[in-house]
Length: 433
Image (cartoon, rainbow, N blue to C red; front, side, top):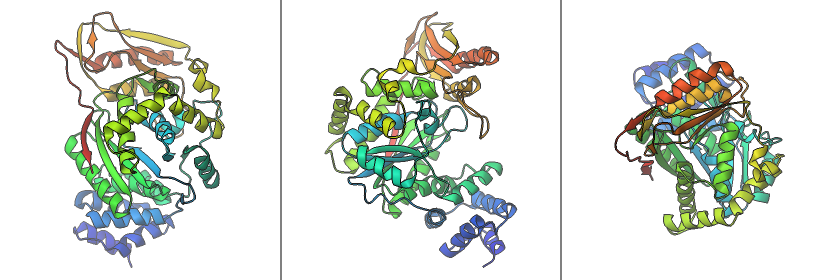
């Protein structure tokens, strides 16, 4: 088989066979196909697309390029969720302990952030001592003890994805639904959970900017999951404003802890409850969404959820006293308040602008390897639909970068728009079964 013939075939918009796709992945991972040929192939895929079967073959070949995780010895229903990413999206840290507290096993491999804030791993590392580098055997043992573990993806899981993603990023072929779906699903299927909910964000603070694109991606990923025999559903949620009120690493951890303690309401909690209820229904431990949400709320009220968070922190080497007393988290030396310059209802908040401001303050990375200031970030006091009087506090910024303060303040102010009437905010846009 010749890879040049495979490139030519896709360039002519012909359907690739499973053996052709397997040949591509196997030989690319071995280093026997050069990047310049793969770049051309990716561009052919970008313009001529892959059908469902081709996407399935690609996903399967990517999974087979490395190791998989066998969770069969962990008793109970193993569940996972994936978010396509956004601003202030700390759902994992709320959802995981909630699901573990109702008897589901929340097994998650997460990544680091590149962009406006850290990823889930960066956030968890704001808790002193928390270890995300857990091996497969220890991962399974922690799950058996507490029903929850969140760890970093190992180098041996889907190595093809790491190679392809770096090249996609360098060749402007990231935004192709088949390439996105295969990248996400290969890592999820390799983990070996029973059920998966995909939280596809849409809006100015998300990767998917419009609803039709989000629907297309969601439907493809759900179909792919089912082809692998995985109970898979998707929920499309809005990222027209930051999901949580906190944007930053330790700030987001503190917000998640406060939700689990029953001290905080808001959209972050709402989405965690919706996804949690969906997974409970999928795994047959509840008969309706309303009933499931009621059970999850009870786990917050009786302290079970926050105890599960503390269990996870302790089993992964972290200092659980930070969960009891969030005042122990390191504080930024520079704190500035931002006040409203006009009155009205908050009409919109450009989530991406808030994210960029947070990154500039030190909470995110411009490039892989950048060090984060885990205390830096932004806390929003007003969200869409809130009534604001001139002089009210809009946001608080936290940083060690004095030279970034004024720029961040102006960016945050310009991200807000006001109206004389209250705007409705549709948080959940569509559910894909």
